[in-house]
Picture (cartoon, rainbow, N blue to C red):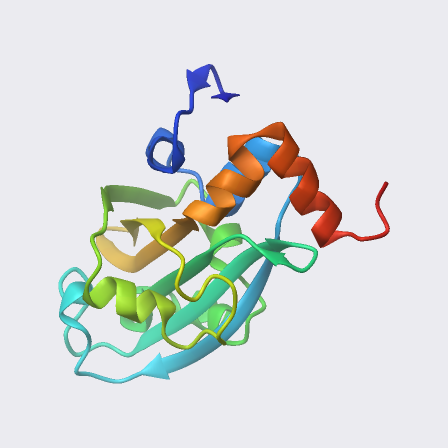
Length: 191
């Protein structure tokens, strides 16, 4: 597969290619915008998981949001975002908490700087990424996960972990036949 002039051999190379959000990466790869669903959201008080502190504040209130991207009934990813509510303006915090604003919309702003992209190994991040989702076909699939930090102003205010299950890669990005089969599953009325 070729995306933006780069040959994409596997899920890891797809995630390494860009600092765009996973929804944008999927849309550019398959030509269809996946729908973003908020699976759960909560505001959590300290103590926070060790993987989130630092860069997020040890005493901060964290907005923890779990989302997934999907097409029709087919889920494509699981994602976890932690927002340090003490490091974002009050109006942005309120819009995030009320779900009037999703992080993908926020991250297209030039004011947001994404950095520190790295791939995760199974462990605390992986458990945090997958807890809180209803059991489903992605529950036990092996995933490639990447974590990144994003800053607003001069301090890191967000930690985001995005996962691309191997099933997503094989079904949508690996071959044309699998891509077409999954689209038929997602939309049984399609021809």
